[in-house]
Length: 471
Image: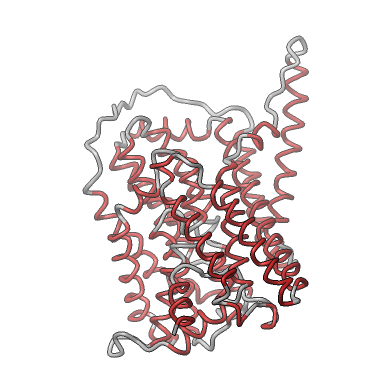
C-alpha cells in the first residue's frame, strides 16, 4: 500500500526524461528507499521554489541545479550499496546528451533572435503595425494568429520568441497587455506546432518513430485550432483599453543593413536542422549549429566591411559573441536542472511503474465517454504542463504502449498542447518567460490556466469526433 501510494503521488510529479533502453537499467525495486523518497522531496521542494520565483525573487535555475546535484548524489550512494554504479554512469551520460542537444538548439535560436533585435527587425515590425493602425486588440489577435500558422513550419519555440519580442516592443509599460498577449502566443504556438511534423520536437519524434505517417499529422488541424481559439476569445475580453497612440504618421523604422540576410539565414538554419534530422539522421541541434556558422561568417564579413568604412574608429559592425553572451542563461540553466533532475528520478524506476498505472492498471473514470487509454493520453498531456513536453513524449515513445493511430495522434496532440497549461510546461513558455521577465510570469499564466484547460479538453473532444476513422 505504501509503495503504491508513493508511486501514485509520483504520477503527478514525475513524467521522466526517458525509459532506459534496457529495463534493467533502473532501480525498479527501490521506489520506497529512503534515498529515493528524499530525491522526490528535493525535487518537489525545488519546483515549489521555481513556482514562487515572482514572490521570493530567486532565479528559477538556482534551485533546480542544486536539486539535480543532490538527487544524483543520492542515486550514486544508492548505486554503490546495490552494486549498480555502471547504471548510474550510463543514465547520467544519456541525460547529459539529451540536454546538450536541447542546449545547442536553444543557443542558436536565441542568438538569432538577439541579432534580429540588433538589426531593428522587431522595431521595424512594430513601426509597421502602428502605421497600419493596430491597437492592443489588433496586435493581440495578429500575433496569436501568426504564432498558430508560423509554428507548424518553423517551430513553436522560435515562433514564440519572435512574436513575444514584438509584443514587448509594442506594449512597453502595459504589463497586463504583455502578459495576456504572451499567454496567447504560447498557447497558439504550442497548438500550431501540434499538427505538423516540423512544428515541435515532440511531433518530429513521433514521425521519426514511424508510428504516424507524415500526412496524418494534419488531421489535428481543427483540434489544434479549437485549443487556440477558446482561451484566445475568453482572454480577449480582459485586454486593457487601448492607451497606445495609434498614429498612421508614426515614424518609419528601417532595418539595419543585411537584416533580410539574417532573416534568410535563420530560415536556412531551420531548414538545415529539419533536413539533417529527416534525410541524414543527424540531430537537429547539429543542423542548428551549422546554421550558427552561417551567421558567424556573416558577422565576419560585416566586421571587415565596417572596419574598411571606419578605418579610424576600428569599430566592428556587430560582434556575434556579444550576442551569445547576452542570451537568457537563466532559462538555459533551468532546463539543465530540470532535465537532469528528472533523468535522476527516472533512474530510480518511477517511469516503469507510472507506465503500468496509466496504460494497464487504471480504469476509465467515465467509461461511457472514453476508454482508459484515452484517459491515459489525456493525463499525459496534463503531466506535460508540469514538465516540458519533450521528455514526456520521449517517455511515451520509450514505453511504446500498443496504441491505434488515432491514440498516437491523440497523445501527440495532448503532449503538444498540454504544456500550455503552465508557463513552465513547454520550451516556448519557459523561453518567453525569460524574454518577458517580470511581465509574463508563472502566476500570471496560472491565472488563466482554467480557460486553457477548457480549450485542452475541447480539442480532445474535437479529435475524438472528427478523426474517428483513425481509431
